[in-house]
Image (cartoon, rainbow, N blue to C red; front, side, top):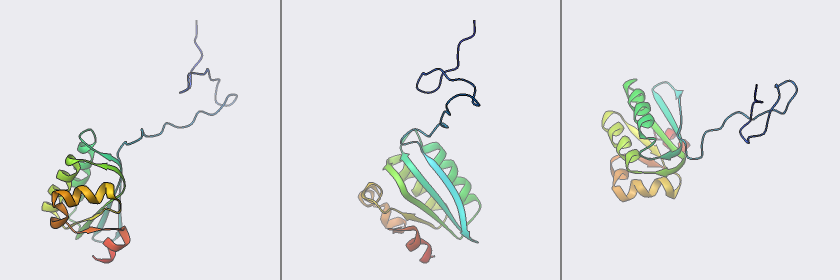
Length: 137
């Protein structure tokens, strides 16, 4: 006996050409999303969104290691999409700052406060916007 396929709500679905469209899966709330781009030669931007905690630290560490391995003149880490910045994220930023000229974009209290409390804002330049960080390069 064949059972009908079920969508994410548990409702039976029919083949795509005849049935309702099932939306593409989305990242879970808080899941880490990383995007790297080079707005000009020598300057890299790592845009980070989601939660930076023990569960998401490994991908962030890999992204920062790979980025700094390319030896950009400046690496801007844009935390404007970060909802939570934990100690593992702060440690990753500190390690990246030891390897390259890292500038941090921390426009919200969620990101600026942990940098300030730990004193990391004294080791890495912190900016309120990506435009400010890029214009300081």
